[in-house]
Image (cartoon, rainbow, N blue to C red):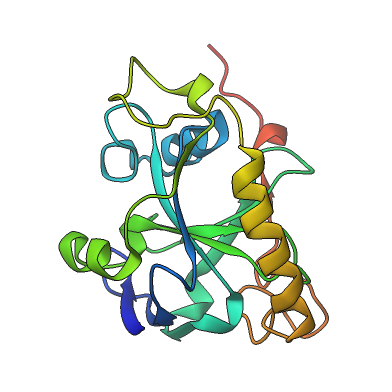
Length: 197
């Protein structure tokens, strides 16, 4: 296990992901339309998405995360009122990750917040699953590509989340207050007025 440096592209938000390894978390590539919409909202598609619209994500616990600089620059949004909380840096629109709630100890860190690509691949290991392939652009290379979210992956993630919750690994967290509220009031993107044409 190792610590992985975290940084936004301008360097104002920095931290570390602790005790990272291929077995301590789950690495996936998600092609869903929401991940693609998040990248478009930030104006960072070419940096976040692969050529088929996939986002490389590493799932770990909030307790493994430390934001040492710039925590006040974290912002959150939901693409729909009941959607995931998607976190980014207000300074340069670097995506940070996705959370479900304060009580569920799962954070999906976006690769572009996790430092050097070569070092990241060594630390995180291979991609375990390519999910939500029905939203992929074009035809991704031949590999296990799932149209949705495979049961096998859920059976890996959910028991681990339950154990981590029982062990209290949903705290500390840089994303939520002690009362369980997001540290940044979520912007609801679907409720934003569209510009007049």
